[in-house]
Image (tube, rainbow, N blue to C red; front, side):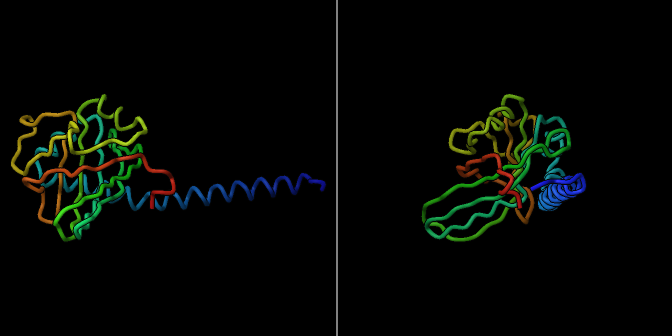
Length: 184
């Protein structure tokens, strides 16, 4: 088959248009998650002076606007979020975990992880799964905690429908970088 200059131009234009449409679709999907991430971060900063002050000086903030946990003897939890560095989203992440025990119910809460050292951010970005809970260097900040009084490279703020959750522990979760297909 012989390609004319016109058919080459049309082929190139079609390929460029298709690539642009695919990128626009991916950007539309991310726009919804991006908005939810920024809203959850603002909520954390509004309900907690500690969250407001620690996020200002953070190396990065990992925000999961909705982590849904469902239990009926055996259960699981999960959600999608984004890493925010210098006010900009630099990556997308998933969080998930499994539970077992005599519990029943469904809960939905936001989780905000404030990374206070570049070493902790590098550990998250390594590409392997990052663990929360069970020995991880993550400190859950209680509703009445002062940001200067808490320790650890990573601070966790758990926010439910009533505000900053007091006295909660972080379950064992895995956090991993999202594939492009995971973001919806």
